[in-house]
Image (cartoon, rainbow, N blue to C red; front, top):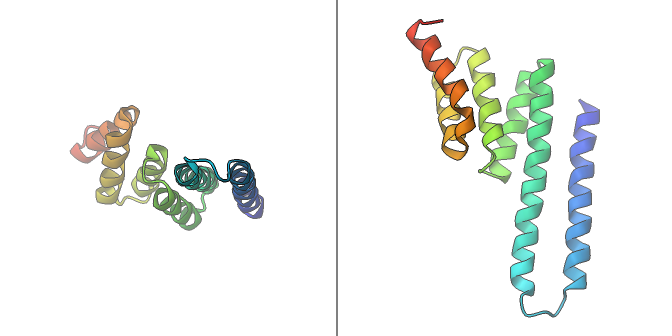
Length: 130
């Protein structure tokens, strides 16, 4: 747990350091405001990916509460992280909350069609084919 949390913190600090360096380097240029918006978006993406990885780690080792919290935080930071929704779908499927699993998997497929296998597997399971 603490190693994974430390990894997310380090990733965030590295992204913030890079953002500050680039921001200071480009100070005064005409596109400075847009660069800052891009840096903030990049930082949110980096932190989202960090929480996604932390959530997947917790899911793999069976810490479901921590996994759900990290995966939810990932999609709050970056709602386009299809793999975070895929992880939430897997987590809910394993806990037999099939309605929430379906909702998360549909969100994942809407962002990236490669999650369709998980959604189809859930549909088969619900219809009794498995």
